[in-house]
Length: 66
Length: 257
Image (cartoon, rainbow over all chains, first blue to last red; front, side, top):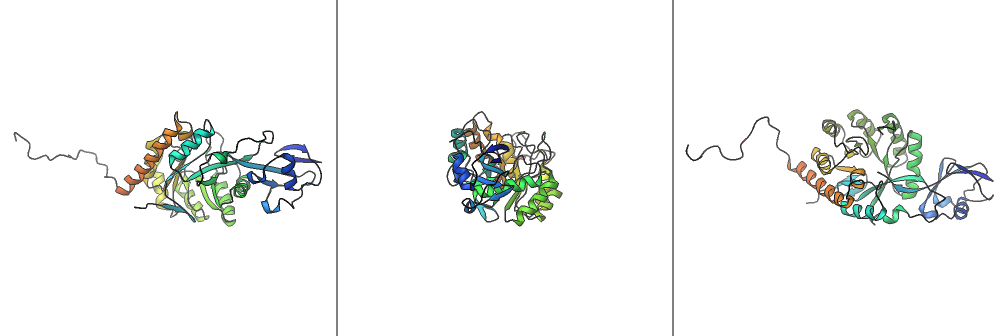
């Protein structure tokens, strides 16, 4: 299915949770924060929050800034 | 003598806050952060580059024990800033946010209407909000009324190194609000940092002045010393300015008189 991931349309397997998506992408969960459809998903909900077709997902991390 | 300061529930000793952007490399940044003696470092929240697996994390290069201050840099609306602040809190698991709502790409001056709007939302959500704002006392008061824990007027545009262009406004802001006033942005060199503290700002926040100096580590040391000197001068109380001379040596008892 298609989701918008960090602004780009991308094909991912169906039935993933946030945890599953991060594992699929090879991203360490403790280093990032995740938003689904403009709502932050707290880490305690990573295992349960499903990703649906057409969802908009943002995965962010800290970078240098002032 | 302990001369600390605090924002919300956070207490600090160092009056220098530093950024983590624009360094030539992480090892230089790490040494500069340590040399600055700062206890607070700002960080930005950005999309993870999913094509760069195993890229080095900024956090590994920030000395242990430093307090992270996530910013909402480059947000142009209150809504974007609020979303970014929420993501920053999720990353950092703290309550501090350096709130920026930018109104203009060329000058990076704040959109103060959006800033106050975003501040109200974030204060309600339990954030300790440190807004980057114009050197405008009326806006500073609005931000204090919105529940911000401090106000951070600019000395000059971000990254400009022009120094503190309107020290009188900074002074008026300090008269106007009860929350701590930090000078954020505009510092070019050590004397600018000293001026901020001499004026009575509780602290000064800078990034470019250190990160883009020819020798960032040495400049970090200079800034540390300047902030300490400025604070001491503020506490000591400077002499009033006079138009004419006031001799330091006695005028009487001269030979041949």
